[in-house]
Every structure is written in C-alpha cells, then in structure tokens.
Length: 535
Image (tube, rainbow, N blue to C red; front, side):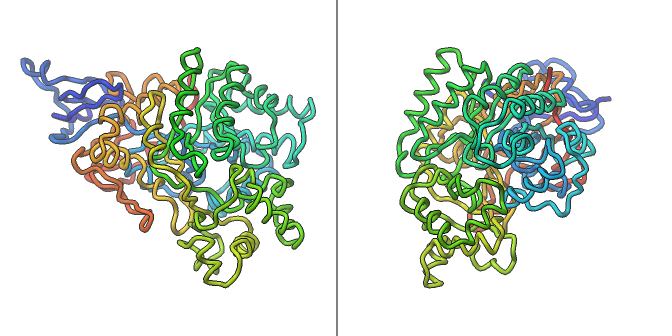
C-alpha cells in the first residue's frame, strides 16, 4: 500500500490554474497519484497506510522563501517553527552578499562580526566548514526545512581582496572567478550581492559582470541587493538589468521595493522598466515581503567610507569625535549611501534587537524617542548604541509605501521572500508571518491576488527560477513538499508588537512526504536537506 492518501483536498497546484478537488497519494517521498474527483467517481479510490481527511482545506506545494536569513538558525534551532509553521518547505540562503561560505579562518571571523545583527555571532554553532560544498554537507545532516544557497559576492571579495575600497587586481579577480565557479560546482544555485554593504559595495560593474558570466555558465542566477532603494532606486534597478544582460545572466531582484518619500507611488515606473526588459528577452524575476517597513542593522546606515576596512575600523572611526561628526553630517544632511542616498529620519529607525542585554531598554523605541528621553541629539544616541553594542544592533526602518507593495506583488514575475531576520528581542514580523500574511491579508481580505495566483507566486514560480524540475507543483512524480491550509482562517499571528507568534490556519506541512507540522504542532522530524543546483 501507499504511505499516505490526502482525501478530498481542494488542490491549488502552483501553476496558477483553477483549483480542483482531488485525492493526492504520497509514497516514498513523492506524489504518486493525483486522482481528480471526476476521475474518481467511477473507480475505486486510492488506499494507503494512512488517510488524511482534507475536507475544507487547500492542498498546495510547499512555499519557497526566496530570501531567507536562516543561515545559522537552521543549524542551531532544530525546531525552526518560524518557517515550518508558515508552510515554508525551502529557503534560499546566502543573501545580500554576506554569508559563511566560502571562507578561510580570517574571513569567517570578519563575516561573523559583520552580520551579527542578522544571524547572531554563532557562538552556539560549530563552524566545521569552509567551502560552499562543506556548508551544504552540513545542512544534509538534517534540518527543519530544505535550503538552497547563493554564493555571497561580498564574502568572496573579502576573501580575495579584503574590506578595502579599491579595484581588484587581475589576480584577485581571477581568484574571485575561481571561487564562484567552485561554489557553483559544489551546488550553489547562483550568486547574491549586497551593494549597500561592505565589502561587496566596492565592486564596480565590470567586476560584477565578470562574476555573473561565471554564474551564467553554470545556469545560475544573480540576486543583487542593489545600490539604492531610495533616491537612486530606478537607476539602481536599471544598472542591474543592464549588467546582467551584458553578462548573459539571469536576474532575480532581491526584496524589490521602492522606499522612502522620494519613491511614493513610483512602483509603476519600476514595473514599466522591467516590462520593457522582459519584452526584449531578459530573464528577470523578483521577490518581495508583504509589509512596508524594512529591516537591517543600524551600522548599515553608515556611509560606505566609514565602513571601509571592516568592523574594527568602523568602531575606531565612531570613537573619534571628528570622524563621528563627519558621519553625522553625511547621515543627516547629505544622505548616506548606506541609507540609500536619503537623509536619515531618526523617527523611522526603530531598534529591534541588541546583542548586549544592558541595552535592552532601547528595543522597541525609535532612535528619536530614545534620544528625547535621554535629552540628547539622535546621532548621539545612535553613536552610543553602535559603540556599546559593537555594531550588532538591528533595526526596523519604517520607510515603505503600501501602494508600492501592492503594485509590485501583482507583477507576473513576482515571488515571495520573507527577508526574515530571526535575531533580536523584537524582530520584524515578516520572519514569522510572510506567507500566511499573503494568503490571509492580501488574498482573502483585500483580493489583491486570487488564491491561485498567490500560490503560484509562492511555489511554482520560485521553483522555476531555481530550476528545480520536481518541486513547486502538485504533480505526479514531484517531491511531496506540501502544505494544507484553511483559506477561511489562514493568517499571520505575528505582529510588530508580538513578532514571534505563529500563524493560524496551517495544520499540516510535509517535506518529502513526512509531516513536519501535524495538526498545527511541530513534529520532531528533520526532513530538510540541502537542495543543490540542477545541472
């Protein structure tokens, strides 16, 4: 007998096609039969060792988080309900140009410090890998959900060039090309960049194009956090489109938003730019999270010149009164490139997490509010935090626009990505709520997308971008990564006040045919593995 039959489900299959009622049979980790109601009427219904009554529930492919920051969380937290409870069955790691492979001992220590605000320092993780392949092997020991990996261009530059703002030598560029090739050969699905983060931001387009040519030769894609989401946003998008077209590389735009006051209502201009490129033959997709605030680290707001040389150099500059005044001027008057060319508004910067418990009183308040309470200028408070917390402070940045969020999520190349930072005592709720928030708020409550459209954005379309031929659809022969949810009740439990609350209306989640969520509870199953690039 088969392992499992899911009876009388409303199947939304990930293709965008209308839903249908069916029995879905699972055996040995794969879907072995999809028996539609009409076909089943005159024949014996399939039987299995276990039968699950799905009356009133939608059965869809597992959701694919195209922009995740679970690089260490998957290793330190076997439960990982933040994603498993949402129905996420695959996360794409290595985002924004900074992650933990490929590295040597020096670079690993530098990267750990640079992105403590994203992932924690990792003192509870055994860093027993250095290459991309070794990291993927580590994931293969068993994790909560599946994971794919992007080679982080900033980490590659740190390894080959360092953290200085200078051009790479021919030998350094060749080493970067070789590191990217090795990462692709070892199973990465593409390459990411963080072009407002050091040291990746120091790479000129010619260098990025050379690395993209390597990625393209292996059938991968380039995923940039580009150079501006603010004052120069459209120019930054146009730059990435031109760069990848020249390099012959597929492009996936990370957290494709139009933020800050200068971009209110300008999403149609971005979409027109993409439509022209698509009509001309470009291969472009994008991801977004369904919220208006962003999330990053407080140190990311600093101008690039202040970040040159790595974390210790940044702290030295902040400690020097004269240099700190220059930083303040760039932030508040000029518009730092770290803040996307827009003068910083301290009342939009909310502290979401600190590494030092002694600073906990700042969490949940904006920099301006804390400064007012202390009777000092906002920059004095921000500087105090950066120094005392050793650059590890994480923030929410309230600079988005709802009309832009809705317009971009409707686009035909859109996919879903949480950009979820799991660190901090009050993190962004998108880490726990992105996928049910799409289904509950934007589908059921607002009707921005139909259910079939939305599921396709979260499943079939990202699987196609990742070139995974047996995932993302409810089809015979596909892997049984599946979600059962109630369309009438599915909702994000997480809020800005209570960001770690789990969602409602998602009782069952399967990976490779094994229940990782059952009757709304996390099981002890670790069915996740590394998902490597398909040649």
